[in-house]
Image 1 (cartoon, rainbow, N blue to C red):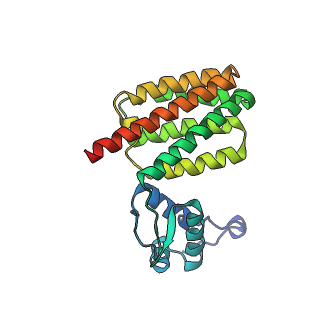
Image 2 (cartoon, rainbow, N blue to C red):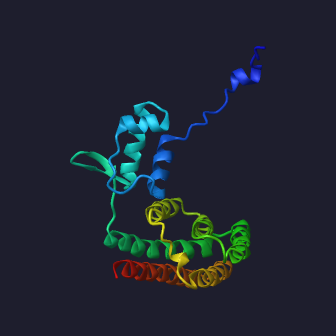
Image 3 (cartoon, rainbow, N blue to C red):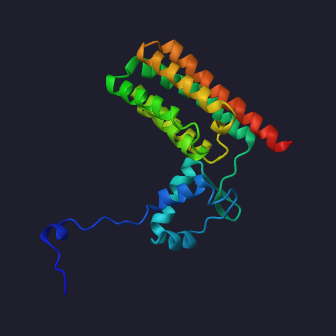
Length: 225
């Protein structure tokens, strides 16, 4: 029996379920499926993404602009970042997160507060969750703080920095006691934002990410020893 498409189906064809090449390649880089230094061949990626080479070429251009890949002597490869570069990212993020918290204290609305407050008890229930889950929920909370800043350019910059740090799966939240301490710091930050105390909010956000940077240093020292 042949099924005849309805008028709506003719006007609105089903969406393409194939992943967007940019998103698929980007996620593969962030997850480590595509490793640092790995060559990126258009033809191979096009076959993998089940698309033509043109959208893959466009995706690679965007990823190069994002700083996730670089052009070497033999073409494009997944970019490797040194510990020094990652520390630079942390230093920049400390400044931007403090700025976002200050803006959030000044510009937040009731919906922003509601969403941030809802995250606090949710995070408290995840003490026994795996590191990946903790990292994802933690990122969700900080995106809510960014949104509360209502500053689009700041949100874009923080998103790019967070993306680069996301390539390193050894999350600082797995460090002993960090999850519980981090959650207390989150609650204090929301309190400051609700009180519209921009200076305190900025100070708390800066301290929070400075602690994360220091733990990252300890993790590297452990790896080297």
